[in-house]
Length: 396
Ligand SMILES: *Cc1c(COP(=O)(O)O)cnc(C)c1O
Image (cartoon, rainbow, N blue to C red; front, side, top):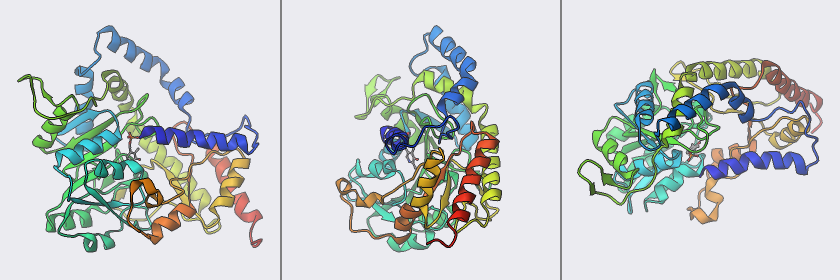
């Protein structure tokens, strides 16, 4: 799954090159993994050396420690480290007992992994539209429920939680399981409650460019349910009950690597600071881009939400020309996503026409948002965007 992301990042570089945009020295990258590493290099190398020096390769104390810390942060009883965000979703869907003949409602505006995790168990993903804040439109949820509906998978996109008051009410009323795709929302809160602590299970990704990023693929499932925790703990490691030495499931080789866990645990110490920094950058963007052209910014005044800005997504009818302009000025951006997921035929979609999802595909662009970017770089991005809208005012 993560390969897709990586390809996307590289595709942006590729675009810059093929269009003969000069890779200027003052180029502003979408993410800066080299600088991220440089700043933590000594600590990371020490951590790796310590872990390998002890021979702690698989399922050791470093993993247990990290799981304990994530459970504490999210506010759940358990956290089970796995291979990737996709694997977290995959095993959560399995532990919830979802399969053929079950419908699972989720959104069309999400990364493919949410939908694949449902489809790969033979269950049917039912896709609904999102609202102005890019998250599940709760006005549409209840009408989508059929006798076959067994679960809802809200996706907390871009570091903002869905309206969990309304979602949990509907889930309770219809006796539906809730599995949160919280891959983009570690640390995000709704009424002071953390993403990943509302449903039966919360699924997180530590893909390198998520807010808490590993040095490769990694993920975790959070839950308060001892049975879900037990099942995923066994599934992720060959389905074996290692105390009784019995195989109790057809499982997977999907542990969160111990060395990765050690590195993640180290980075976790900075996580609160990183969130503050992201919120600071979001404020600078908000101030600098207020009332510019037809721009819609990702700020919705509602005190119940604490957003962590995994992505800073802006929206304009003139997205494609703006993207070109930013490219010429060396600003690397990402479009998530240029095409509705249901238009990919291999996924065997129904004939969906979701108007908000489709408009979003035409109109959104994610600006650089990371803890490495400098104040100056953010100011320059704002300058270019303002320039674009003032230069082209009335020329259409
Ligand atoms: C990143 C992501 C995933 C998958 O995580 P991986 O670790 O890349 O497998 C799932 N859902 C959403 C919304 C994501 O952003």
